[in-house]
Image (tube, rainbow, N blue to C red; front, side):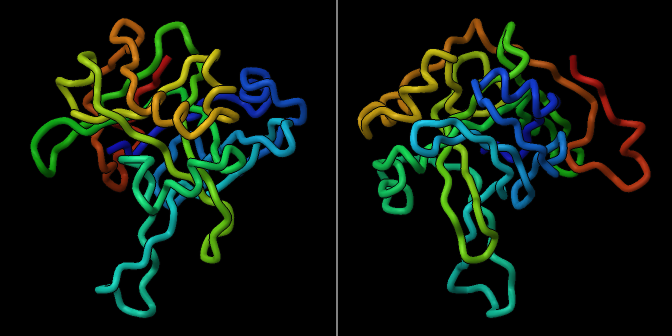
Length: 216
């Protein structure tokens, strides 16, 4: 599971990296959590656009009370499952999620800390995703997951489907088989950089400034 990532770059920097000609300002925070806004790149009539969307497809469980808020499904385990296959078959519903770092939790329950991962020599990189328009939250997106590589295995057995720049078009415009192939291929170990921190996974009130660690 990936439940936290950052985008610590300006809209102009993101637009330049993803060849978006018309940068869009966003209310998305630098740290992105499920159920909150994040920046997404997708194509409309072959033109790449940036758009703020909610991270997570709304899901209402049968056991939930009628007035309960839906749960955000922010990770996609298998593109061939019924919830995702219809969107994955249609390139207009695929997207790129701009990321600077993503985090996994380490340590004992109640004292878990944040371990951050990034891509070597890539100040911005892309996480493969799907998006749609929901009745509850408007445009929403979710990130595709895969089995981890050896660089991430000490922390977690799953990881985001990270894309090389020359794979962006394949994800956005390729066939369904292309998309599945990208989910199943292994991202190179040597390109992953890890930073273990003492930063609490759940920041306690009044201590955010104390535990904040700047990531370069």
